[in-house]
Image 1 (cartoon, rainbow, N blue to C red):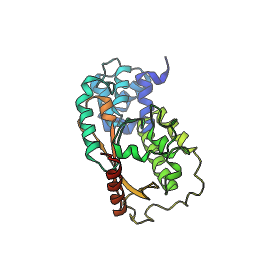
Image 2 (cartoon, rainbow, N blue to C red):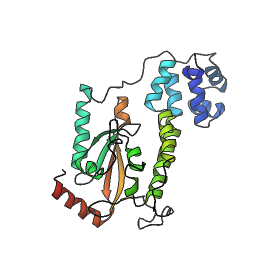
Image 3 (cartoon, one colour):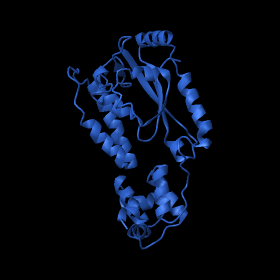
Image 4 (cartoon, rainbow, N blue to C red):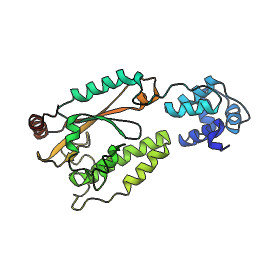
Amino acid sequence: MSTASTFAGQLRIWRNRRRLSQLALAGEAGLSQRHLSFLESGKARPSRDMVERLAVHLAVPPRETNALLVAAGFAPLAETRAIDHPEMEMALGVVEMILNGHAPHPSIAVDRHWSLLRANAAARFLLAGVSPTLLAEPVNVLRVSLHPEGLAPRILNFRQWRSHILLRLAAQVETSGDVELAALHDEIASYPVPPGARPYRPFGADRHAGIAIPLQLASEAGPLSFLSTTTVFGTAVDILLSELVIESFFPADAETTAAMARITAQTGAN
């Protein structure tokens, strides 16, 4: 059995990932360093309460907490239903309500790997011109945004936006230890900069004065500028639902507000 597949191995990996000594983690979790050492060496078997307590103090995400519990011989803490499971219907109805209610501005729902689950009409409008290959299921929105055959040639502040995306993705990798996210980060970091992309502007060197990094996009309706916010289910029990993120884009200037209203009127994108 691989060390990483055992509870002891996973616990040691998570402690090292959080850059905590055995003494520090033991103090935070309320057990002796000797007991923690025995847990990490496999000499002691944890109780279910101990697994859950250590997971909390190590900020282990729900999916990985399940893996810790199973490795220790316990039932998972939460279920993971497929997105098309009948019991997900009500939650997805809420997602659709949020997306459609955000019209005429773009809004999307993604899973933990940034695969597109749902999008409103305004978001689909912005994908015009993206290579059909990138829009084949499953659609990864980060790949679509920064790939040379995606939105990259149309992102007016490409260098700044890519830096923002890579920092955000790196933080997710650090938090989750997800190898698929790590591979996605490396893939996106390898994409070339579009010809003619303007120089990198330091954070705070634009009209938003360091408050947020806008997505500035060329379109048939003229330049568009958006600020994004994220929404999550705060009381989700199902793991997939707890990982689902709704990203909504708000106009960052009056010109974008007017342009999106015109686009909606012309295309009926509601």
